[in-house]
Length: 539
Image (cartoon, rainbow, N blue to C red; front, side, top):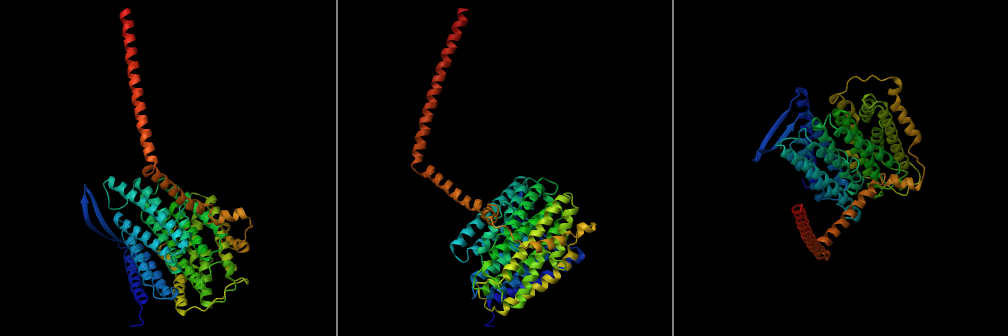
């Protein structure tokens, strides 16, 4: 028992919860069972404040994915962090707890508790290493998440004004809910915080940027899809997610940081989920969310193992000649092939479904062609990453890693192997889509074109800066903090500085001038009235 660490104990608890959620999922899915528990908290001014727990097959399936990835991440973290760091462990555990709270409850109060908890814990994890870059990234992350929290509060206030606090309903308050979900899932123009959050430790990046924080907004929008279907909000969501996919795909082609490149690919896949949701297929978006959570967590874990063996080097230009164990390299290739959507992988099931729906939806051939090009860009930057890792201009000597890192990656790879076909059977909402051979073969042609292109772009300094700053989105977001700081200084100068007396004197003088003008106008009015009466008497 002395060798039984707290990390392993917490991993065992998460593993037990994972098995329990899987068993409950099969029970709820088989008999199509839905359970709803309502807890009355208080009633104030005829508004009932309740806490609701809602359970169905979708709830337990998502909880199973979260618990399974968390179970492996804690095993992985014990080796990666180098020593028993209990602060990191408890922060990770609290992060998982708030995510489960947000999954289980659709009530306004439960969503707010889980939402705020995720934002606070993610900020603590981003600034974990206590460097200047970590604090800057943490500020951007916290500011964006607080903006989303304020939008969520506005939606709750709007619902309370309409007499309901139970769940989100069809109203204009849903617009604020969509904006808050866009901030949490890093949709345009709130995309800058996701690459900046890579200052966090790699194990928590595997959890945060695959299955928890960034997917929380997508999951909420899938749950409350009935609130905004058929409204103008779908068009707002569609345009934002389309720009997100475009910016993420083009910016990844100029990225050299290993973790930021994986985070930018996550941003693009989140845009895919939001687009398919705005077209009208929430279950297909949920299917892609689950598949993406599994293979992206494995990609982050492989990247973390490589960075850990290279003693912290993350620059792809220094990481060639990957002299590494064959299991980690194979799992890295499997996760990259899933991201590319290569046939007979789990990512192929969801991505092929997405591209077919784009072609057969009301948007027609134009949207299908755009997303075919985005799929080609995904293949291009994935292959570009593999080319850098397999090149011969390495500056890094890789050391051998522990077998426990490899074991957790291998367990996740087994799940990635079988998840595509199983989840396709479970969450299948598609009708029969009949496409001709030329359209059906187009995704394979895009994969071949992406392999031929392999992400090599023209080295123009201006274009490189534009792409590396996410079409200047990073620059604008960072300058916003400076603008807010200048505004606060001006406010302090006006409210507490020497200008306050000047403004008071100016106000006093303006009041005196207005009184004088009023008296003059009254005298002129009386004199005009007197002359008018004299004229009348003379007549």
